[in-house]
Amino acid sequence: MFAIAVRAACSGTQFDFVVMPNHVHMLAAFPDQKAMLAQCESWKHFTAVPINRRLGRKGRFWQQDAFDHLVRSEEQFWYLRDYIANNPVQAGLRPSEYMHYSKPLDIQRPTRGA
Image (cartoon, rainbow, N blue to C red; front, side, top):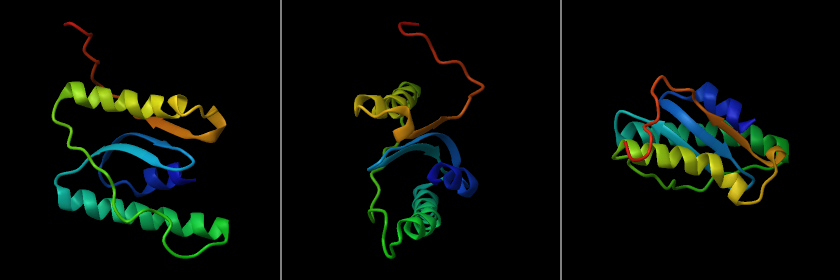
């Protein structure tokens, strides 16, 4: 449900995400930090309401702060895509226990050592 909500609410350029039982990783691009923070708050609100409703809860669902990284190189971009894809496997989760999305890109990943 969160994955569908994120795609519907996304105003940044979204590349990858994984929703796990206790946290979320997302790789997205924004024009500036203010836009990123505003969009993150929007996603949290947009997703928390239906999740809380389904759980029969009210109030804050997500942690108030997010941990963000500025991607400074193409190498780091590819590293983060791999990290997001592999995190559930490293955590020992079965495919039914997480949701992963990776946006198809029009660019080729550079080969190592090239």
